[in-house]
Length: 142
Image 1 (tube, rainbow, N blue to C red):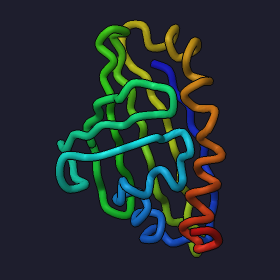
Image 2: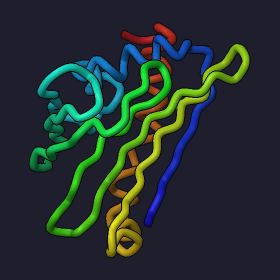
Image 3: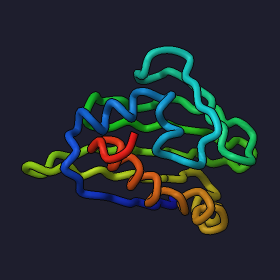
Image 4: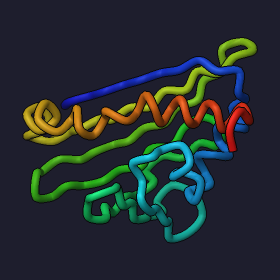
């Protein structure tokens, strides 16, 4: 297994963060690496979608875990590499503040090796994306 995690603390409410999560048409606003994203149904467990990153082929993903105002995980299987990529997005209440954590977890027989090779490329934009998410949720930018 290979894992990356980044967290921020914000005054934005869990509901404001969640509104940006479950509106996939808004993902491009907080994640600048996304060219296009669509889902094939409501934002709930088991629903599939396509995510296209700038300069990349579309990736099929499945919403494997969805808990309103708490977390969601979108999972992509890369069969050619024999790995599963989980992109986990968690919201935790800390008194009057909110902790938001984004994780990338690679699992499978080659996960550690592949994570060490491609992990930095996959995760390099996460801190900036989380900053954008925070500013959007607080209403600092639109």
